[in-house]
Amino acid sequence: MKDLAIAALAILSAVALEAMVPGGGSVKAAVLRLCSLGLFAVSLNLLVGYTGLLSFGHATFFGLGAYGFTMLLQSGQFGVPAAFAATIAVALLTSLPVGLVCIRLNHVYFAFLTLSIQMLFHSLLIAWSGFTGGEQGLIGGIPVPVFLGVDLKDPTHSYLANIAVFVLSLLILHRIVRSPFGAALRMIRDNTQRAVALGIDVPRVKLTAFVVASLFSAVAGMLMALYVSGAYPNFAYWTMSGEGLFMIMLGGTGSFLGPAVGAFLLIILETLVNMHTSHHGLVLGLAILATALGLRRGVLDFALDHWKRPGWKAPRWNKPKTRATKNAGAADGTDSHSLKSEGRA
Image (cartoon, rainbow, N blue to C red; front, side, top):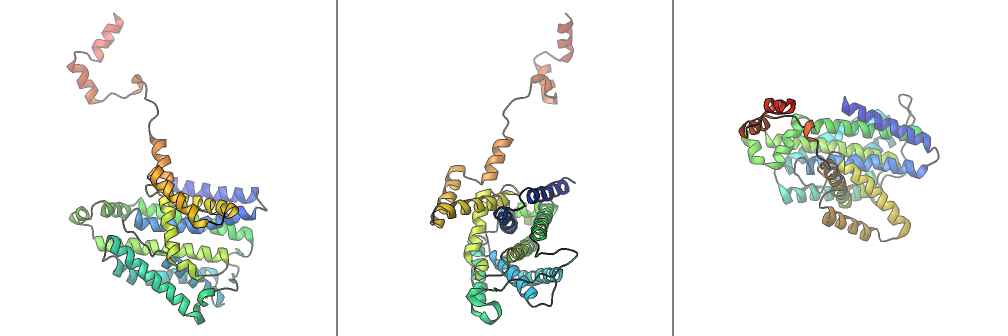
């Protein structure tokens, strides 16, 4: 119920923001980018932060979601719900064999294998120009038929629909990481041998985590395709996966919403950098260097650690008595009965 309440509050906050800033196109655009990039980073953290699998190729499924969704809608044979479901099915069928190959390796070998698969997919997007548009990508806009009274051509409808998908996806992912399956992921991350000894099917759990993360990465790609009204090869380039890792490092891996906070901070940084200088890479590099050396963890992890740190001690009379306290009192010859007697005296 707590998760549902937070999700409802997030949606209501988005509705209030849309009402308060009716003409704020830049603010709404930033929120739409946050929906896509935030979901992409959170899905990647399911592998990096919870399972201990460093993936350099997570953008493969981000690009697959964007291209698949755009192609199906541009064909004119699919409505938005059907295109969404079909793209999810394609991502599922693709992530299963890719995951079966990748999870056989660990550490840096897993990372570079995912990177090589991503670069292969990116090369196919460039080479198959008659189908994917080549270096230009799928341009010309995305036709979005009205469904269930939702018209994605309407800025308000598009804004609220993106928020709803983003919040619902985060809610599902949060339930997953808080479930026994999420506990198995953390055990594999911390001690694989112990997980095997306890009877956990490690390859199966890793494959499931890989597939789930890939599916939500595809959903993030679909949201980005709707935002830019097209699909482009850079969605599946290695720099996109690098941005995902950067968002995770910036926000933190120790909390579920850390990567989403990292996406928010990245959007702010990019906006400020583009306003004042053209040295985009230099400033972002300095930002990640400052985060790594100064905080030694993500921003949200750092903030939560300091927020949870006790700043005051409870009064003595408010502390509940424990068995150790009672035994200590008996050892030095004082107990509650004797103290009451002294008080009456």
